Image 1 (cartoon, rainbow, N blue to C red):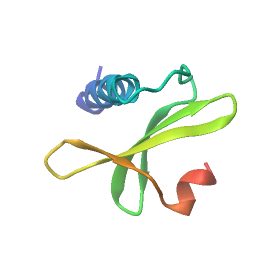
Image 2 (cartoon, rainbow, N blue to C red; image 1 turned 120 degrees about the vertical axis):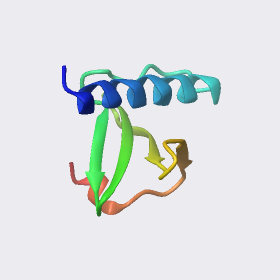
Image 3 (cartoon, helix red, strand yellow; image 1 turned 90 degrees about the vertical axis):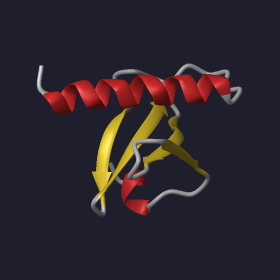
Length: 77
């Protein structure tokens, strides 16, 4: 596996943990949730069959920040 794929797996694992730690009851779909790049920033987008459940921005220090509002370009993907 490439380094980027390993990093993406770690980000996804951490985003799922943050989702459930924050009280999320519904299960995000692992197949449609992914790490995405928009406007030169990385985001972890958790999706379900009904749409986007949560978006986390990857900060410069590698920490995840949960967003209440996210870029419109995320909705289009």
